[in-house]
Image (tube, rainbow, N blue to C red; front, side, top):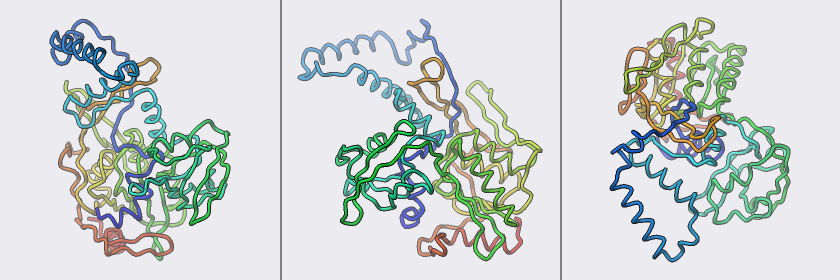
Length: 409
């Protein structure tokens, strides 16, 4: 995907967005309380006599010779060891989450948080924190903050030298509490107070394409809030007389399995939409019901950044012959991770690793392969045109032309 398009659209769905963008992992949250029995403790996979001896040696050397050994934070060292263990098993999707990291992850999956209600990004070269876009009618919007405002201070704390996550954490807090912000707009310094509110992160954008009867829905991630946002969007464009639909999941790195299954249930007739298989041969099957379906022509736009849950969506509608896929080959993530909290009641810390493969309704596993579009159209950055605050590009125009021509295959 070309950087020009990602700059324009990517402020909403790109990698620098700090608010509630899931990391692009298709996951099934579960609660497990694992009791380590002697067999696991003595497993040659990780813990054996050599490991224990070497661990003791390292600890002894650090205690005796490390200049600042008295300043070592035991919890940080332990978290680092746990992270290293998960990073070393050969699963690129595996991770260890500390208690605070797991809390942040759960918040991002939900797509809800108490904060100022704005997308924030970091200018890596300048080190500045920029408000990309306040949510419409959100706290930041109501306080008069605007796109392009550079954050200077949060509650009197300078943000210079801090990471994006650190600044976002400063701005989050308890609902109905106030936060003072100092921002730079052009060359003017502005101070304002914002009341934190629980906000739903906008993951769905929709409209009727100008001068057509084609509905357009863009989905930036598959969070908990995406289900209701997608359903509301689809209901709205149908009420406005849309005779066909474009679902744009380009640059969508994935999200929650339960969310994509619910969205497919709104579109597809009754049937198997995907299934999983574990190392033991077990797995789960997921179905759409006969309660709802969308019986008009659909185009789904994908690209090389469409991954995980996006590929579940595209693979299902393709196998059902319910939509035409246009764009470029998708990312190719056909495996499922399970998040396992290590404390009771689902609290952190937690671990995550790959536990199964998933398959499309026709039995395709696309891991390392991706979804092949029915109509391949490589993105042309020179094709961008903005009309009425809406971005048209050559892939979108192909989808519009296809639907207007009446083709369905």
